[in-house]
Amino acid sequence: MAEARLIQHKKWKSWKPVLAVSLLFLLLLLCGYTFLYLKHDPTLTNIGQRLQGSSMLHPLGTDHLGRDVLTRLLLGFRLTVGYSLLALLIAVLIGIPLGLIAGFKGGILDRLFMRIGDGFLAFPETIIAIVLSGLLGPGIVNLIFAIVLAKWVKYARLVRSTVMAEVQKDYIMAAKINGLSAGKIMSKHLLPHIIGNVAVTASLDFGKIILLISSLSYIGLGAQPPTPEWGAMLNESRPYFQMNPELMAYPGIAIVVVVLISNILGDWLRDRFDVKKEVDL
Image (cartoon, rainbow, N blue to C red; front, side, top):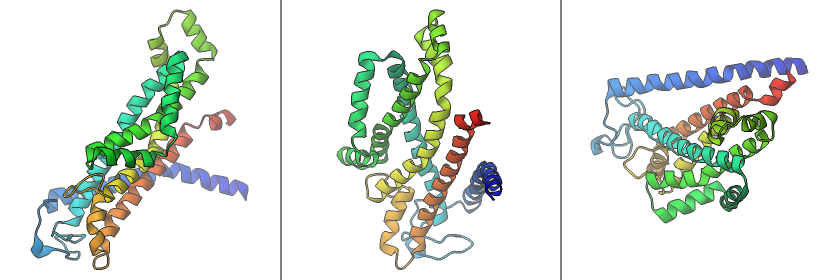
């Protein structure tokens, strides 16, 4: 019985990346059909066609201003996912070098970094992002800046802990004895050891950032109308929930699907870079 469950688990793990890539491929086909064939303007209002149902011209109907929902939904995919990738990339690019330097150099620099990190970690990331967005004012640029400030500490501490474990090993000692510079040791010997952990953490964190951007845009701290961002679309559709509940269902389902794909890829990367599993084998 246990062996059968193990076989099923292995089969599911092998299908994870295939499922995620298949969903992304279907999404790309849908984008091509919408923007190359239907060709709706996502910001053009047409009050005469407001709140229409599904049709050949509008597969998902129109919103309260007569705009095509499918076009705005797919454009929102580009914006929501693009903003999330940008915030994640900036946080990783800040966290990796700071964690490398703090973990390798140690001393006053490391203690200073730890105090700054402890200050950020004293509050949940969501609270930090909300407070900073409220102080800086509504807007997607300010929201991305707030998310970066809330997220960079996680990657810096992850890199620092990995580096501190590696610098005690013999190959780093040998590199120092042979006169290798600190920059070359960090880039050639330490950086390859942290890429796997950072990739797994970033892939799992990507879905959280999407949820954070959508939720803050929903309450008015992120993207502003008429930008077709999924959280903003949820907020715009809220007054029409009883009349046309699908207007809120479409962006909500889109958020769930993209976060699910992100988690599937994150689980696959975690299995792929699982060092303990490789040792047991």
